[in-house]
Length: 204
View: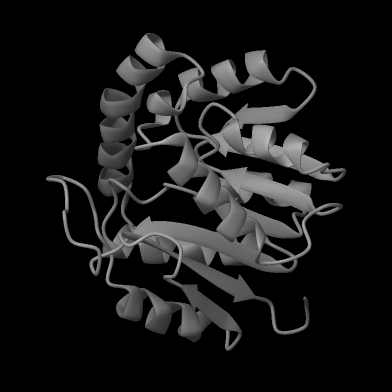
């Protein structure tokens, strides 16, 4: 992904999400999920990639910190770092959960020092394209110690919204197979959404 594409993506995120955060604050609506139930399902499926309770979790595209709410409800006792490209998101997340670590971060590689056991990314590719998804997933896989779990809107789901990226699950799976032989595709929890797990060959 070239620098111009990266800048365009960041600006697209700001135009979309900053007004929502200003309007809705810490609501699920500020990150433009259709419902709390759908958001919770996505979190559940992401974290089924591995035993997360004591894991070091890097949450890429953390939004306003809703995954932390889920982790708290499930007695999480590990180390967490949430990063996002939208500063207003991480500022809101830090106000909601002052004891947790959130960073405004534009470079995934800068989180490598956290040494995560699992990297999760929910809703990260809504305004992306296939080239960007591949570039980012490769970076996520490079920084994790054990696993990556990410989701995307699915081309199989129908009812696509204009200007949103709906990925072809098979094409994404094929790309992930080029990174590791240990890959899982989940398309069983919502009709318009899929999740992929990637594992390091010597882990989990």
